[in-house]
Image (tube, rainbow, N blue to C red; front, side, top):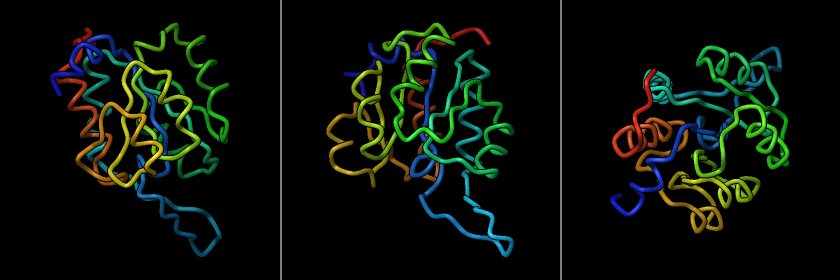
Length: 167
């Protein structure tokens, strides 16, 4: 990890995908036909620790469903963009709204829709089960799988190696 310490020192915001990162990609349909995803409590702890240290958080996802909206509200995600299969325009909007530059942003994603962002950000991460094209673009591959603490793992790396902002 020492090789990336310099990159991590600039990070001020974590931007995340949802399906495959905060979840394990599976979607359950309840008896009413509503989509239900399972999120890791560990990831929520990591996000809260980042917030405590002054980092900002954002989600850019292709998903558009009530379960995702509720989870992001519960986590108090600072910036939330849903229904964005083309993530680049949302990312540019995020930078304009937040005032952060590419080198100050860490992004974690797992599929081809994420590659444009992974190439731009200051620090890029993915999960072990990501598609190979994504793995080739990333600075870090989490030890935990998507939906099972991958975000928590990345948050720990940021906190241990990054700049500690005042929260």
